[in-house]
Image (cartoon, rainbow, N blue to C red; front, side):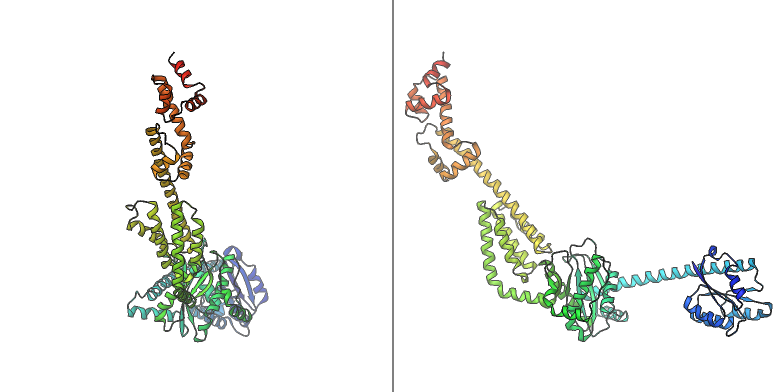
Amino acid sequence: MYKMLIVEDERWEREGLLDFLDWASMGIAVIETAADGIEGLDKALEFRPDIIITDIQMPGRNGIEMAKLVLDQLPEVRIVVLTGYDDFGYARDALRFGAVDYVLKPVGEEELLSTMEKVVRGCEENRLKRSEEERLWLEKDAVHHLALRQRLMDLLLSRAEEAARQQTISELQAGGYLEGELCSIWICAQPAALQLPEAEQLEQLAGRMLGRKVLVHPAGQGILGACFILLIALRADEAGLQPQLAFQLLQELELLQEGGGPAPLDGSQREDARQERDGWMVQTGPAAWIIGTGRPAAPAAAAGESFREAQNAFQYALFNGLSGVLAAEEEQLARQQFTRDADPFSVQFRELAKRLRHDLGSGSPAEPVLDGLFALLAGHPGAGRSYIASQLGGVIESCSALAMPAAQATTAFAAGHMEALLSCRTLTEMRDYTAAVVDDMARLLEEKRGRKDDYLINRVIQLIEEQYGNQELSLAYLAGEVFVSPNHLGMIFKKKTGKTPSEYIQEFRLQRAEEMLRTGKQRIAVVAELIGIPNPSYFGLLYKQVYGMTPGEYREFVQR
């Protein structure tokens, strides 16, 4: 829809033009009026119309003078002049300096309608042209912006030649991204977020909050995962305030993610934040934002070191389950602390690893020791992801020797576990992976123990079937033959067969006795001795308990 201004000193003509045509049907929705050229200029600059219809002869400032002044300020406005025959020379002058058409007085409806239809079409063409020009400009600007982001990464990763590096720095300066003596790199992300803001949105938010232009490169690959890399220009007097600035951005990001608007800190709030340094890094779980900051660098060519420091700080926070703002200095302090604690840490770690291997081998639950192992790791955050991965890889390799043949526990097998551990972004992910591997090993060992027990039971049954006539045959005798304790043998035998070894021996002896009585002619005493029960009376008692008759009665019954 378009806006129109009518400038006419004659009231009846001015008001008559308001209703002269069906302006709304032509797309002209808003109409203002002015009584002379002076008011017309003021209203035009305030109202900014698309179309002006103006008389020429007016007191104070005529239509020609007004039109010239309007076109100086609003070159795209389309002006139609109303002129009498005596003013026709003025109309020609108006056309020369930019008016688009004229209409002779007295104004006729058809003539004005035809003129205004042409004027509206011209407005439409202008609007389409501006829209296309804006689209092309935005596309060109977007392409340039994307290229500048990529060149920033080339600069930070030292992938560009010196000439290209200097060209990038010049473009960053020309774009207003290095308006300060120093620059710093920040890396921020919300690891558990399903959807992060767009890089452009973050540029606007950070720029508005910090009061400077901020270049944001969205990164979505590698161990850092989906995150943003920010180039921040700093004045020399802001170098020590970097954590506070990052903390303020973090608050804005949290508000943005919750659907709220920006809420910059005032001076007193910023001072409170500065005094509450310990509150910047809080363990609030994986849903919170993390900002890792590198140290300010000068000149911009040294920003690569700030980037590496920001990476380390961000990765330190992410791996250890921290959130908030983490400066490079804090990550470095944690590493230095671990260097001092490395020896006692190693002693404790080896002891826990040894206990884990023992518990796995003995069939005891591994969870308590695993909890202790990861509590130790969590208590030494400066150890670093790579070092912890190598230590856990050694534990897995050691335990694997219990659960599988040496042929399977190859170098490739160990390398596979190391690769998986190094792909973990957090200590929690490493714990989950290690626990899953340990569970698999416990299952394999249980199966292995089960197979060993099966072998033992089968061997004991074989011994019973071969030596049932041995009067010394007993639980203790069998345990000695298979080199296990009587208690252990009794337990696994009962578990597998549902009978004790003694019950199984007696049952098998009586089965063999029944067969001899049914098919042979030996005396009862001989049969008893052959099955390992030298006392005929005791043999008869046992036989009657099972078959319901004495051995003699049974033989007579089956051989009748």
